[in-house]
Image (cartoon, rainbow, N blue to C red):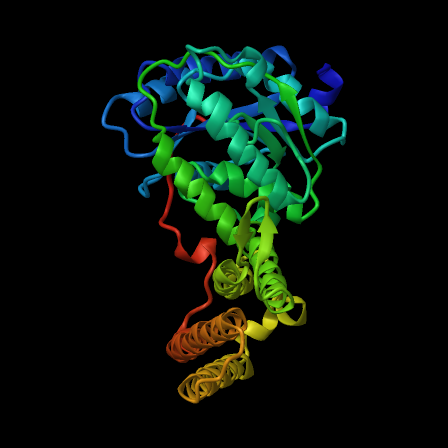
Length: 408
């Protein structure tokens, strides 16, 4: 980046910190030296997230402005730092010295050229077995990156879990970040894609960390998956649910078209046994996905809200009615089959099995839909008084005060 770029932008470097006394001072000094060398005006904010060592004091002596965030978590600390930032561009990184702060100008350059709103530092070119564990590099990060790409509708970046990022501070309100843990990295990308921010990445490398890692591989991975499920239920619930349900219906029809089964080599396959499973599981995924999509903070508001029908009383009443009718029809079919059996009818047993399977599917699916309607109606009735009595909410109204010390 040239000084021309730096003259038009100011930069806040935000570092969440929990017991990083060995490295936080180095991170602050390298950041400030890089800003000066690049002709960038800015600040370094260290968010002390409950350190029990001298991290805060060391950061302050190195030239950082220290803010304190009592609520634990990587995401909580970062959001506190974002709120405290005063400059045009926010650069987030870790305080364990894994990121090369000399790359800050390269990270900010696409924003300065008005080519991007959010820039990620790709770690993979500089990652080694010593800097990034095998499971993180070749399993965890690629899998989450794939899911994030699906949730965004396209592949946005190659390293979705990089914590070295730069973005316009003006975008924070629209991003509306809420995560308290490591999953904030995923949330930021999905929300950025949904609101139309321009996202790109540059190669920044990755250094060996100083001190102990705060990352919990499986716990943090599960939190990422939960977040993707909540923000993009289409990906893991609605899409697979529609596919399973449609497949189940087709197999159910095939069972009646070929009641004797389908020959697969020397075997004979009865699709009727899987069709019921597919229909019920698909239906459950669809119902759960519709509710999550409706409740998602990305679903919109008013008439534009996705799956708005889920919140209407007519929907829950319709579920109860449809479920009861489905169960009644299934029971009637079973009753007719019983009467036919008592009379000793000589119709093919395979056709009777397919009919019995249809009755079973109708009963189970009907029970599922009716139960869903009853539970939805009950939870809606309990939530309504709370919504009426709830005071206006928002991050500014609910957060605890953030204290600040150090140099501005």
